[in-house]
Image (cartoon, rainbow, N blue to C red):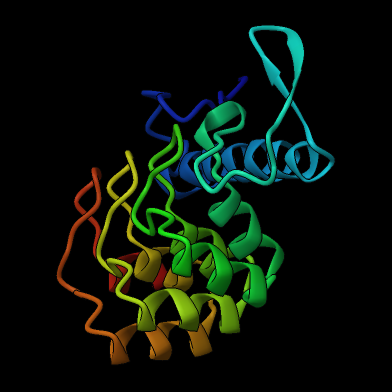
Length: 171
C-alpha cells in the first residue's frame, strides 16, 4: 500500500513528525536557495529576473528577504551592526514570517544573533507557522542557541500553529 508523505496527509500511518519534517525541509531549502540568489544580487520575481539594490537597508528581494536578514543568515555581524545602526527594521518578516534573528539562529550565526538580540530584536516573534526562534533552535538541537535565547527571555510556553511548544518540538 502506498503511503503519502504529504504534510496534509490524513493517512494515520504517516507520522505527523515525518510530514512536518518534510515540509520544514522544503521550506529551509527554498529559503537557502533564495538567500543564495540574493547574495549574488539577483532575485526572481514572477518568473523574471530583477536586480536587487543591495546598498539600500530597505531593499526587499523575492520572498521578502531584507539585507538585514541576508546579513544575519550569512553571519556578517559587521553588516548586521551597520544595518541596525542605519535604522533597519529588526523585526521585519519575510514571506514565511522569518525575521533576521530567526535566520541567524537557524544558520547558527551566534554573533549575528547576539547583535540582533542586544539591539532589541523580538526573540518571541513567530513565523507564519507559529514557530519562534527558540522553537527553531530547539527543533534543530542547537543547544547553544537555545541557552542564548533563554537569556534574552525567549518564551518557552508559546505554542506554534500545531499546538507545540519548543520543548515538544525538541522532544
